Length: 153
Image 1 (cartoon, rainbow, N blue to C red):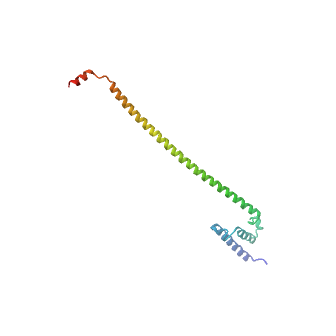
Image 2: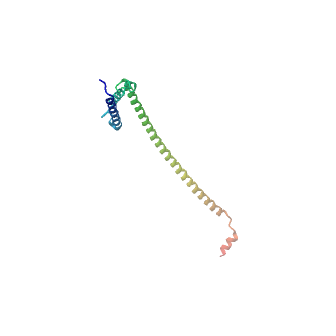
Image 3: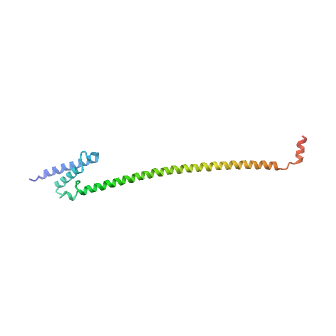
């Protein structure tokens, strides 16, 4: 015997509430413990039937079907590939960071080398110029009249 329109509306409203609760539970971490894909599918198919919307297979894939199982395997493989790519990218980032640090240290060492080398060249130039000045002073002829005057005093 069929349902009255009021009973049907009440059933649809109840199914709406069930579907919303299942979605909330699934999103809140209850997937697998309080609700699963098969239970969600059952609630949605009951909702479709209650609304006279035709066969559920028009709208949803049965999670127990081979098609759904293959799709899940594909998703798992894609997730594994993405995780592998992420690990590789992390390793590359670590390597790049290490390379950057090595380059930074090498540049610091080069700077210190050139700085020390420049300081040594400046010091050498000072010593050389001082020696040249001393040699020039020694090479200057001494004026004999100045030397006699200095001796008489």
